[in-house]
Image (cartoon, rainbow, N blue to C red; front, side, top):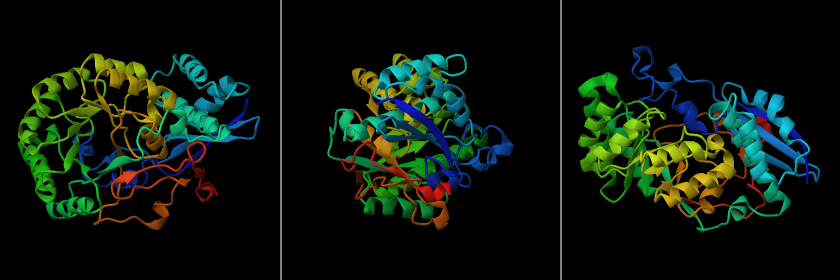
Length: 388
C-alpha cells in the first residue's frame, strides 16, 4: 500500500468550530494584553479562521484525512513544496519512519510551529489510511478502547456579565457536565481592579454550580509570574481543578515557580510541540496537567510518546480542544481522563452558515460524555459543501 498522492485543501473554518469566531469578540485576557490597543478582544490581532485538510491517497484507492489550523495559508507550501517528496512512493503504514523523516527534513525551518502542524496533519491522515485499510478504528490501532466512553468538559464561560455567566454554568450542570472551564477577563495591565474582577468571575461560577463541579480557568498566556502568584492566592479558596496557560509557553521557569507557590494545579502545553518539548516540561516540573493538541504537536505518532512520557512521570494528559482525533486519542490512552468541548452558551447563538461542520460523522457529546463508533479510520468524511 504505497502513497500515490498528497493533496491539501482549505476550509474557511477553524478546527475549534464556532468558538474561534465567537472568541474574537468576547472578553478574555491574551498574550497581547500588555498593549492597550489590543486589550479589548482577541479579534484585534488574530488571523482569519481557516484550516488545512490533507488527503493522502494510496495505491489501494484508500484516502486518509488529516488536518490542522492554517489561518495564514502556509501549510500547503510546506506540504507540496517539500514533504510531499518524502511521502509519494513510500508505504503508508510506516507512520514511525515517515514521521521521523519529515521531522528531520524540516529541522532547518521547523522543530515547532507551522512545519510541525503540517507534519501533524499528514500523520493524522496516515493513521486514518491505516485504519481504513485494516477495517479498524484509529482508537483500536492505538490499543483501545481503554474506556467505553470519555467525559467531556464544557469550555466557554467568557466574562460577559455575572447573570449570564451564572445562567450558562447552571445550564451545563443540567446538561450533565461534571466539569467546566472559564476564561479570565484580565491580566497585569488592568491592575488590582482586574484581579478583583477575575476573582469575582470565579466566585460567581462556583456559587452557581456548587462545590461538587470541577471548575478550571484559562489565562491564555496573558500573565506574568508576580501577577499569577498574587492571583493564585486569591483563587485558592475556590477549589479549582486547574489554571491553564498562565504564561507564554517558553517561560517554563515561571511555570515551575508557580507550581511551587500554589496548591492549584497548573496546566498547559497546547502550544508545545513534539515529545522533546513535553519532555522539557516534565523535566522542569513545570506543569501538573499536559494539554497537547494532536493537530500541532505531531499527530498520533507523537501523541502516543507524549502520553507515555506523562504517564511515566505521573502526569495527566487532557488534549486541547475538541475533535474526532482527540476522541480516538482518549479512547486509546489510559491516562487521558477527559476531553475539551465547546458548547454554545445558552445566551448566545451563531448564524447557521457559521456552524456548518467541516466533517460529517464527527461524534457529539451526550450527557457530558462522548464515544466513537467502531468505523474504519477516524470515521469521518469531508463536508464537500464547504469546498464548493
